[in-house]
Image 1 (cartoon, helix red, strand yellow):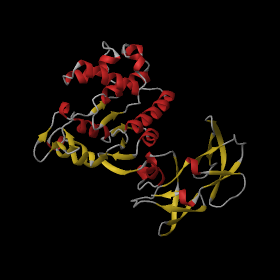
Image 2 (image 1 turned 90 degrees about the horizontal axis):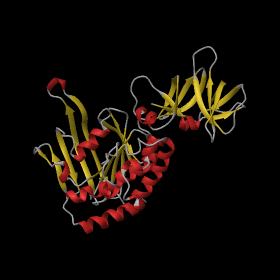
Image 3 (image 1 turned 120 degrees about the horizontal axis):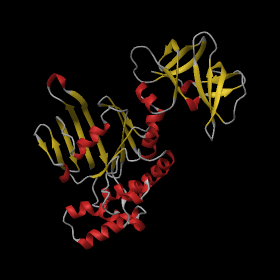
Image 4 (image 1 turned 90 degrees about the vertical axis):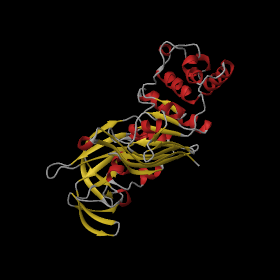
Length: 356
């Protein structure tokens, strides 16, 4: 059975002709032990969807069920209050009580549920131990690092064993290095405890690392959903391809098409590519930066461009190639070594040169 089921959810702000549609018929599910990431740009509706599930926003139509309990039904005009939905919530700001200790912050929800003090003590101690916070129980939030505060917020959400935990940009307040460590910690915790989680993020790397399945939202609708690998390697639309990776967009013209195989003219060179998705209007051609192969010698399915500059990234160089005169064209590629000035052949493998 699904831990969470959302069906044909519509939500807008305002009324009548001035209503601003935020969710336009979103349907999704979350299975037990599964992590689903709601990914998308600002304004795509991902946080609104999470807040609607939590009971913090009121949809106009559709249904939301947690397990076998209906918590919202637009047709029946039924909406369960947020506090009765029994969901764990982790906010972007952590929202910890500054005057309460770690123990009291985590125990707060259990006290509201009128649980006995000895049971509260056991449950809080157990969850703090699970999150590596046992030795910090008597500290106050201002005495903790950002990563520790984040774990306290997660502990507070987990302490009453909710069926689903909702995470709203849980790592965005951390600096880049801490984010990577917290990402690994969060994935390990989710797997170890068998949690069912719905997580909002705008960071595709974060979504791919933590989730089992990604729902990519675009303008209030689901653009595409699937495993992180399928979303990255086999995007159905240009929006998905561009959102899920670092790409080169090429000024290409379609010369010939045979099913999915496409012959392209890129700066006067004839190259083979592959058509993806339905596509509409003017075709767009892209290739992931990591798929471009740099060669000093002529190779198949390649264009020749002069090197403009190389940027050192630690484990590799990111090299920028740019045409001189004529129609402007630039391409980025990775290299293990810094390249010498000069012209290079940039091989664009046909199965990775996508036309939408």
